Image (tube, rainbow, N blue to C red; front, side, top):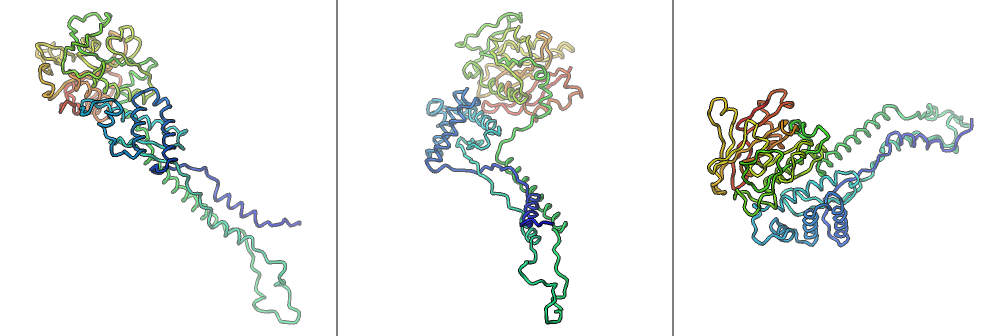
Length: 473
């Protein structure tokens, strides 16, 4: 049989390919501090990429704040990037403004953090420089991609292949030939060494070692990615189920926000167009304004839209005076605010718990108990109470199919804005929603629900919501 030249190379190549298959390169991230001019230019180029993305360029506030803090950090002024300085330099706030009453910097930074997480969650951006805004700080941090070291070759495969390739040299004297004039040597009379193929046990051990190393590396890489990249938190099932009547269908959800409050005692016709109130003379002097809407209503809107965005549900936002009865009949609605939202006042008139005001007191009343035994259960707040002395507020939370519009409706409405904010937190936070559903019937997902909640108010901020009364039907 014809001999093929250098046959010993083929087993070695076969074993190496079987033991160590090629793996795709993986990208890792490492903390990075730009120092050189080229580094700073690379960060600014990445910043430009971020700001032209649809997550950022459709807003004026997000690009302005992010560019300011990045440029200040690159210029070595990170110690001066504080909430008050950002408010003054970016948003034109006067020196000494009250950051607690005007949290524009905190709200904008929170939105930027969420949008950065969404941007880098896309695999298409995995090789880009990462700009992050840590929670509790306005100083950005940077990370860059590094290529991992090449995987080690199968360390025993070359040795095994070299052992198989050793053959007696043809240039040496034959060990089996008898010397011409000497007796057979005991040493030379031994059986010649025969080299067999690779031992199967050794091959199996090599494969197992390689697999274990691969698994350990994969686990380490997975843990590293989890620690460095924000992963979207799965939605709580109870929150999704609560909102399902609004998110299950194809219709767009309408968010209806209250405006500066006005007298609604003469408002009896649902089809009547709501007139714009006079902004110069608001009825309730304690209603702090952020533009056209109350700040608490905007905060509540943000919490609720996060739930809908998580479920890829389309929605629109409208002022109470701009939302028509025909519009509310087109699809589900979310009503935010009570005395500053005439649609809330209209649609809660036939519910068990509703709003009313008498002699300077605004209150929530229990119509069912009053009709049953003549006794009144009320939760009230005095409008003439100084704002800084407000200690508690009350709100109504409801999810039901309205008989007037024929559509699912969710209501989050407080007597004052603190109650509205607490109501929105209850139906968007799994921990607080569990308290509402603690004694709910097994089929509550297919039922209507209305509840009265209470919240403690400290320094103008609402505390955790507490359920005072609830009804399922």
